[in-house]
Image (cartoon, rainbow, N blue to C red; front, side, top):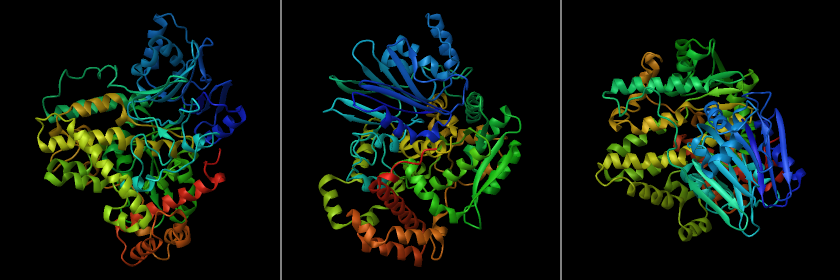
Length: 614
């Protein structure tokens, strides 16, 4: 696991590259590498998880191919044997050492042969210099880039603060960014909050050749073999589907348990993480599990469910009790690590949790992220299946940090006018959803078509942007590598192929996954209603509590007016509403504005734009 940085075509000094790479050092504290030549550079900060004695980057093949990468390649042994049969000798035991030979043999399609989580950069000097970037199929490892067509250069980094610290990368916020953020809690797809910075989408190859431009290619499902012993078609019954999913997850969790560093699990008390923890405990004796909870008495406390799941799995369980009074000091660091706003309150909790995991001596953590997207666990998916003609309205509303009517109330008159002319984020979201719906076969039932369309949008755009980048940045802020069984290609292909009624009905969600978990997790966890694993901000944003005092200071009228996009009087009315009649909608709106205001303050103060180097 590493952090990577580099460019092709820019004029950057080694000192500026090292300074920018230093902002990513927490994600790679064990070694720092930089190969900088006239017109190109590749750098990596290493977190030693596999083969700690090897792994020196850039990996090379002669003087013509140089590679840096971030992630884990789980099929590297199979690839090593294949490449040896083709005449390649690979002396380094680290998983990434196979990449130069793989690229040399397969060219730009090399990533189709990889099974794992990765963000890869290849400099090919064998003829005219060219840069190839590639991301994994789920988007588990982020990669951001800035392409300057006029200058003929492309710069990239694993984290936004590092990329923005490189000379020549504009730190200009997109005017539509606030509306995007409040509409979907963070920009979706390849967009960021910055005008000239993009995120490389999942399953995408980027090829840049100075003088010939840049092109993007979205890969298909890939060439990974189906799960060994799996049925030729869908299992015949729900029970058989559950057994197949259980066997698949057991195999994938076993593969992800392999590491030359200590491995633990994160258990929230819900189905997904409890199942991962149970399966991981089969592989790792005296497995340690971690959950986050909060000092004091708060709503939605899940520590009892997490403890029960841990007892059932036989783990050594840790309750990380965060102090809500500390959140006002953590929040700026969290926003700086993410590099842009994410309105999910779980960001602060996750930051505190991964800090505790690292302090306890663990480098790798397995989590249950991604299960809801592939096994259909969100309430909005049931609404789409059964909601009739207005399901799109309910779906769009469910994604928002601030509902549409309240957004309009909070915006300044000038910003409302600009959005009317430029088009709102909600309109663009609806168009993207309509495009997904148009791609569904015409003979699909209305509910099934709606579900297919929104699931495609969730997997391609929301999951990488909203969940996976957040998990990656906040875990690597504390030198912890997160591995995600539910985002593995075999699991996603299997879940997608299962008949929809075996995943979701009007009454039950994640049916095949519940069958898979039967006997492995406690019945109390298996049967409990879904509950978001998050920070109870409605209760914490109360008069006299530290978080509310912080909100008042952060959203003071003079600070709000400075940006020109929000109506200061409307923001004050929102704060009073939360003080007098607290509710979840108002609390999330206040929280979202706090996060955005924190980001804007950091953007205006260069010393704060990058997270502190480790």
